[in-house]
Every structure is written in C-alpha cells, then in structure tokens.
Image (cartoon, helix red, strand yellow):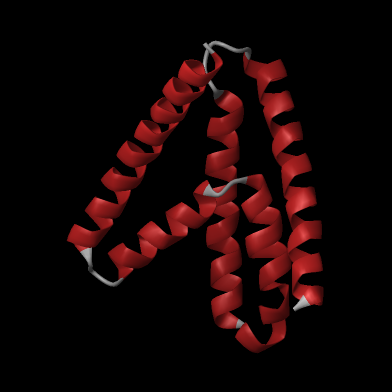
Length: 127
C-alpha cells in the first residue's frame, strides 16, 4: 500500500508540473482571452487516458502495476477530466445511454453549481 501511495504521489507531482507547463505554454501561445490552458490539458489528458486505457486492456498482466503511477498519478495530477471522460465512455460503451447523459449533464451542472456555491459562501464568510 505504501508503494502504491508513493507511485500516486510521484505521478501526481509529475502530472501537476505538466499541467502547469501546458497552461503556461498555451497562455504564451494564445493569450488569456479564452482558457486555452485548461482546454488543452483536458483534451490532451483525455487523449492520453484513452491511449493508456487501450494499452492496459491489451497487456493487463505486463503493465497493470503502472496504473497507480500513470492513470491515477500522472493523468490525475494533469487533469481529472481524463478520468471523467473515461467513465463517460464506459457508460456509452455499455450502452447505458441514460446513465451517460445523467453523468455528463449532472457532473457539469453540479460541478459548476458547487463552484458558484463555494464562491458565494467564501465571499459571505470573508465579507
């Protein structure tokens, strides 16, 4: 368990640094008129998550010890949107379309609502 936690922590640090550098590069390239950094991170992270998922599904026994480091750590530190995308795809792949729609809409709506509630609460507490 300790080794797994170290893998997740190391991967998370690598992913977070990658996220920072990607955001910095996107801002330098495209400016600040649109959140290109976050947009780029979410798309890149989802793409890589898809590739890693296929590799892990075809070579489970060989690579599975890397799941905590790569999937949870690096990609989780880079973006949790990649995990969201994989979960959503899984629901579609299982032909659970109603659940997929609820997951998609619910996640976006509730996450944004929670953000707004957190902002309102913090502003209320801090005056």
